[in-house]
Length: 403
Image (cartoon, rainbow, N blue to C red):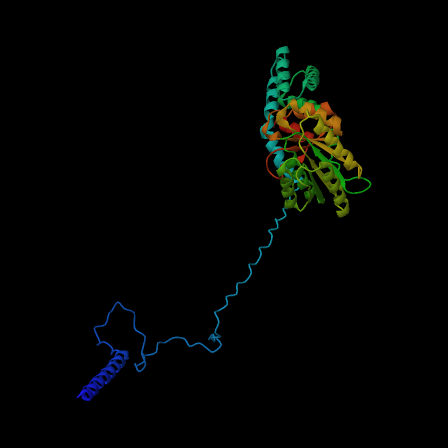
């Protein structure tokens, strides 16, 4: 009996074990797919399965085999081309206006701004009776125009004598008298040539000096344009090393007309820059070397001594042909004080008067020439690049007295 019970138990255990295996294998089988439902119009289209019917092919351009990228098992390599460097901008070289054409325009401008002096004198001289009060008024007009005391006395004495001899006076006769006396004071016979052509060898060397604010660097650049317009080759020496923008300003002027600029480090020795400019001018075979110096107050002895050093260093290579002093015409008699000191240090050979178009004190031309004994050679009559012109005594006097 016990044996029968044991056999039954073993049979039950075996059956239970076999049942667990069957259930486990059934659980490992994949579940059947869910029944189809209504399509979701918001869901993206499903990928096609094996056995699905293919869609009607769309009309797309077919690519050739050369256009198809073959897989190589690696990520695509994007090759970036190096940026192409921009070519440096070369400033366009300008062709300056010829000197002759420039003078016509500047003469008219000078006449508009200066003829108040001449009109006032002619009005007084046209009075029927020229008494002492009238002659004193004439002196006042001349002194106000910065003609200077001594030149004014000479002019009045000359006019009084000629009016006394002439007797009756027509407007044309008065204008002729005044023109003759002014020409004597201005000095129609003075040599006003800017010496840039040495007799022995090139280049001609011109040094430009003056106090701060007179337009010295601008005048140097404009003078380069005048020379280039006359067919000369120019080298610019930026010896103003104390003002940061001076060398850049001068180089810009030079680039406009194709002139080479020699410059040094900011705060460097100006005499060294001037020396190098003359040296390079010789090597390049240039016609003229223009040396722009730093503006100096005439009351500063140390700065003036340094200007003398620049002159001595330059003359070790070649003699200076011109030393041009730039004066602001609006400074009047104060400009004479500046002129005296500069003349003592560097031996001025010529004067450049700037801003002559904006002042009624054109008599400074007479006064500064009388003070220094050197002629006004160039005048600046505006802010334009070509508003620097040779000084012509006849044109100046005609502008003063008007038509």
